[in-house]
Length: 161
Image 1 (cartoon, helix red, strand yellow):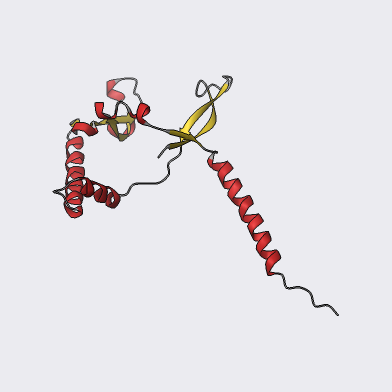
Image 2: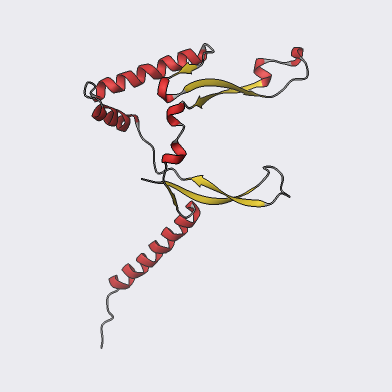
């Protein structure tokens, strides 16, 4: 299976409308792997774990990771990599001006991949596909053509006198 991508024009220097636009690749997501699908896959690959056990472990790990992150810990998950928090917010001119409510806007979880994910680019296969908007236009046009054919075939011939 390949990673689908499309080309999109973007400014070479973000925010600088005078910079030249260049084409950049953007991955197109083909769907979402649900927990149920992940449980099924993991249980197939493991001889000793069935789906409910894998699900229980994933649920427990998620709760433990959240707990550790909220305690300010980095969570090293072996081959998965490390999860850690980054604070999003605005700056203050002086320490006295800084308040949690006024300057901290949110908390983002970041992932630092392990060496296991180091060679993803070399292992990946890529397939260029049309942009989503082009795909939608193509589907719309095909649907209109199909509807026209159906309408034409459903027309009753007019009775001859």
